[in-house]
Image 1 (tube, rainbow, N blue to C red):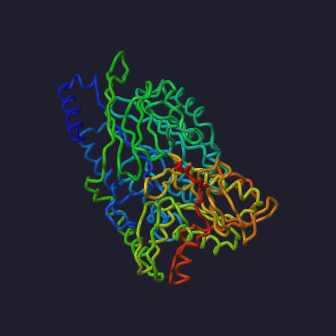
Image 2 (image 1 turned 30 degrees about the vertical axis):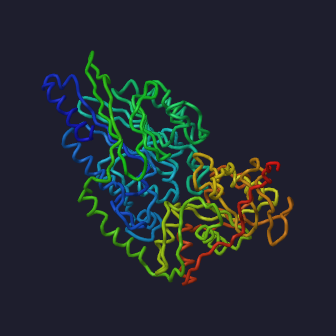
Image 3 (image 1 turned 45 degrees about the vertical axis):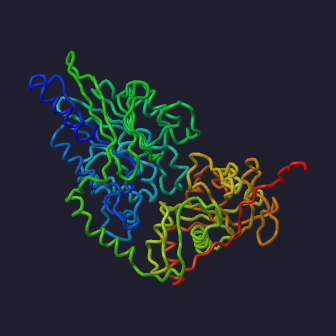
Length: 549
C-alpha cells in the first residue's frame, strides 16, 4: 500500500466514526527522522547531483500531514547538525551568521522534540549551545548529567498534548561520546547509564500519559530476526530498551539502518536510515475507556522522501548560505594533475588515503601516520581544477589531529587491530584471489600506516597478520619509540584501538582535517596523488599436490 493510500484509509475510518465517536477514538500521527547529518537541501554539493532526501522534503511531508491530521507529533533521533559542507562552514565559523542551518530547517518543519546524538558534540559545546538556544523545540537526553553546568538547555522528557491525548517522549543519547570525542568537546557533561536513566524516566512519566515514546540515539545489539548478538552492545542497546515495560514505541537511530515499523516483544520499534532519505510514520489509534485513552492499534511504515517536492520556505531560508557554500567549494586552489578515485576499503595502497596520510604528516611533523578511508562514497575526480570539494569528498568526518608516542610493541598491536577485519581469501576460479571482510565492520575502521613498510597476511590468525614491519628500512623492535599522528576519534578511543586512548600526547592540531586538506592543496598548487606502495597483502601460499604420473 502506498503512503497516500495508507493515510487516506486511516483518515476515512476516522470520518466514518462520526463526531461523537471521534471523541472516544482518535488517531495520532507520529513522524520520526534520525541521523539527518545536516542534509537540509535536496542537492548534494559534494557529489554535484540531486540528493535522495532532505529536511526541505520532510517539511513538505509534515505540512501536508498536519493539514489532514492536526494530531501529529514530529520527532528527531539525533546526529542532526553535523555532516555536510553547509554545516561544517557554519559550525567552524567560516561562513554564515552563526545560525545553525539544520536547526533553521527543523524550526520550519515544526519539530516537537529532538534527542542529542553523538555527532552533536563534534564541534564542541559552544556551537552546540548556540544551536540548542536557536531551536524552537526542546532537546532531550535523560542520561545526560551536568547539562545545567554546561549551560545546555536539555531535559529528560516532554509531555505533548494532542487533542485529548497526552503523549510522553523520553530521550536517550549515546553514552559512548567520551570514547569518540576529545574531553574538551563535552566536559563537564556526564554520560550516564542509558538503561537505568530510561527506566527511571519511564517509571515517572508512564502514569501521566496515554502514549509513551522513547527516542534513543542507538541501534540494535541483536539481530532482529534471530535475536543473536551482533557484537555491538557497547554502543547499541535498543534491544534492551525495547524490553523495558511501559514503552509503546521505541524510535532508534545511530546505525543508519532502514528498519520499518515492527513489533519487538510488546514494543513497536523502527529506524529511518540516514540523511532524511526516509521518515518513519506511525498511525496510533487510541480509545477512551473509563476516563482515559488507551492504545488499541498501531501501524506504520518508512516513507522515502526523495520524490517529494521541497518546501519553499526551507529553500528560501537557506538559499543565501547555500550560495556561499557553493562558491567556497568551487574556489580554485590549484590543479589536480591525475585522475583520483576516493572511497571504499582499499585492497592495495591507495593514492587518496595516502594523500590523507601526507597531510597528517605535513600538519604535525610526526614520524608515522595512521588513517582510514573516510570518504562518504566512492567518487571519481578527473584531472582539472583543484577545489575544496575534493577535500570534503575525501574526508567527511569532523576530526582534528593528535600526535601520540607509542612503542614498537604498541605500534604492532595497533596495526594488528587495524587489519583484524580481513578474514582470509577465497579462490575466484581463474580470476584473482578474493579478500574476505568481516561483516558489519565499518570502512572507517580499516586503518593503514604510513611512514613504515609492512605486509598483511589475511590468512593468518588474528593478532599475527602483520609481517616485515619496518621503519626507515629497519625492523621495528618492541622497545623502539615513535611519534604517531591519529585523528581525534582514534585518540579518544574510537574503534577500540589498543593503547591510543592512554598514549602520551605529544602534540594536538586543533583544526579539522578537511580544512588542513584545503590548506595543503592551496600550498602545493599542483596535486599529483600517488600510492607510496609501502604495504601489500601477502597471503602465505603452499604448493598444490600434484597427481602421480
